[in-house]
Length: 460
Length: 82
Image (tube, rainbow over all chains, first blue to last red):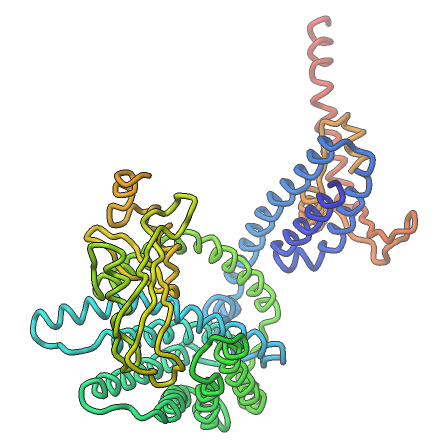
């Protein structure tokens, strides 16, 4: 236990050292570490209580010292800035722009890009529901005042996904490029707008196809590269003034979007998930990295001397990362509420039923790829958890018999199963992908749909 | 740090953070200086600091000030008796 405690305290101490201003760290970092390790060595014979007191004293003193040194460093920089106004302009106003022109990425940058792009895809998927709910609200509003109607829920969901994905994807790319590309904010706008245009265009095609024409099976071979091309053109408009051979970004984006085709028709296997989540990031990351490398001279022309500010900025970045992490906590709870309310609204929009069994029958009576449902047997629905928690979240299903084998399937009967949640007006279907148990938890947390009162009334 | 604790009879317990903030301040104010070459003591490399002339004069001034404070009651007693 003592060894584990020592390990944890040492790691914590080393981690805290990185919070010192870079100048202080460069001057005293090694010495502080050395002396601290010596103090720790000297605690070998100490009792547990004494040991904890020593560790607490060390960490507390370090925390106070970090705050003191940060304040001192800030004061020093202000003093320098006041003494030399040109330098101040460099540090405080143009620093970000100048910094962005200094660095060219190293190869691990591609891995970081791939990771962030993967995260952006997942975030886009999570943001789909709130954006779809917003679009649904606007659509219903438009329908009420008579300027919009007939847009299918499927189309709204697709455009909702593109809205969320545009936001997360453009943000992730901006984060990765802001140090390597002048005017990285324009890249954010270009990428975001490109994806939105692509989403709206594809949504319009699907909307028309639902009503008038059928999309052929080879449609996806056109749509995905088309999305890549639209985003690529939007990014090229930003890149062309800065990078050589910027036009290649169109090809890179088309390849990245097209790579999803390798995953086949579903994402059920790990390999297919990896292709969808990782390949687009890997392709765009490698492509942009090569473009940035090639364009090194043109960017290098704009380089400025900012050595001190560079180190300072890194420390500042860590501060913001920390502040960002802390601010994630309220954001998480806000997101929870938003996710649950938007998912419930979407579910309500698809249908509210008096009983969970009725919801099971309604859900399974349609959506079988053109095949008609002959009958549904063994319809059952019961609380999802056996321990009595979340009595408002049920799991239900039945055996569905079809009149023929649907296109792309191999049988005429299926055992279905999905989640159903009790809302104020009755039961709604919530797909597994929307995390129904998570929604159930949020409902209790925020007492959405009067759920806590309902649970109280229906206690077994 | 142990020496400070022992000398002050545990009234002053220095921790590494406090110590190095103080060292930074004294270095900036020119009271102490770092010796160029680190020395190996008990098999470990240690960076050493020493008082500068200016630092020594500051220290002396502080000793004088504290000495005067200590002497004040004695002076007061002497005056009252005299």
